Amino acid sequence: MSSDVFSFTFPQEVMPRELGLRVGEYVHSVGSLHIYDPDTERVDAVLADPAGRAAPEWSFPSMPEGDNWPHIREVLRIEEALRTGGHLGSTVDLPEYWADVARLLELHRRVRANEVVDGDLLSSLPPLYRHLVTHWQPRVAAPTS
Image (cartoon, rainbow, N blue to C red):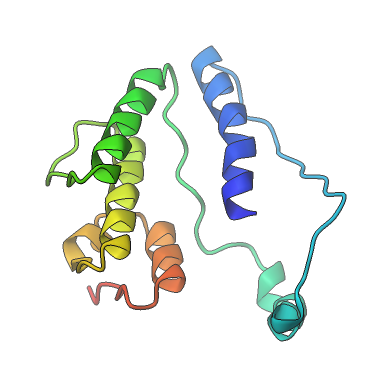
């Protein structure tokens, strides 16, 4: 679902930014969700957690205003290079929002290749991304600073 929500909301964010409009709210209606027996205990814990109803500690970064298509095309070029054996250099000539996307793609490449994810790469990401990455891949250690 996490990938699907991104896919559903991406056009909703790109279009208003390009048109100079406010990004609206996203409402997701689901006809069917599945919970499998091995996950029942975790689902019960999540639903019972009062912290789950608290305001989130972090928010997702906002996409830059204006025409993002040149940046999207560059991120797609970077993704293809990473997928076909390339590596992300130390600098990325993109607005910070899109540079973070490129860094996440590099991090994903390193995890898949069983390479070390250094603290510099991880600490260059916004706090929410660091939190999500270290929970997705516990072997990726959060920076101590």
